[in-house]
Length: 372
View 1 (cartoon, one colour):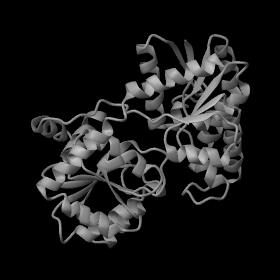
View 2 (cartoon, one colour; view 1 turned 135 degrees about the horizontal axis):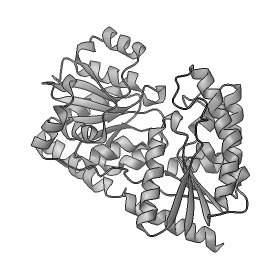
View 3 (cartoon, rainbow, N blue to C red; view 1 turned 180 degrees about the horizontal axis):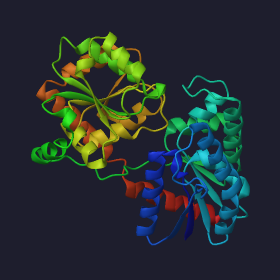
View 4 (spheres, rainbow, N blue to C red; view 1 turned 120 degrees about the vertical axis):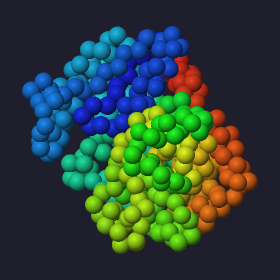
């Protein structure tokens, strides 16, 4: 098959979506299919230049809506099938001429927010218009692949009833593994903020409200006199309001930022962590719990969205508002037998989420769509 992948605009820095597109392209090519990846490109007039964020945003819209559709139409002449790797680009289904188009839907949180639902994703006037275009684009797709049952349920509720859709869960986009202790220490030595600071709880993600970092701070505050460790935030550094909250809770001296670790550092962080604490309010899928499980790190998640589905029997699931239960599980993991049980459960669960399995499901879907 000749498969044209539509990937994300690089200046938007949507790292998880970029990784998904690379993982799908690599997997399809390994199976002998021809793959081309195309994306909107920054206009040469401002490529590489630092611009005020509002201007950057609006020039980006010109790249996406004015310049890119013509290039996409031309590339479609080569393809047997077009795969839009991120539903936020689903509006391109309206410019794809006569070629079957599959869209991967990672979540509908922004669409729901634009419709007035509480998803921690409020929308401006232009944002509501964009999300409407995205939903309309999804409805024009030949087929939609949803990354979780939770996202599939949202699609079924919000889109036309006859839209062909199914669940294809994401695979892991990096070969995470349990490391030898010496290798963990060698990699963590490149992170000076962690020097001598063990044990620690870990969170991987951003400061978006739906990630519930303020809840994580409150859980840790419950532990400050009962557990001697630290709290590590990997990914985006804590925002000023969250840092102020840590000060108010009396835990600021035990909160550590590890800004944007690379994959090798992140793998070591998972390996050395006492547990991953991931009590998100809203998610579409949730890669960090699976990454942690693959590294032999116990996982504590909230009961929201797809997290119980993704974490399976390998994750300790707590009600989002039961922060004492989360704190109690952190303490419970201090027992070696309890810890071993959760690690074993996690390793068993994560075996369901392989890149090879995901790609095989996409290939089967493409053949079905082309067979229609």
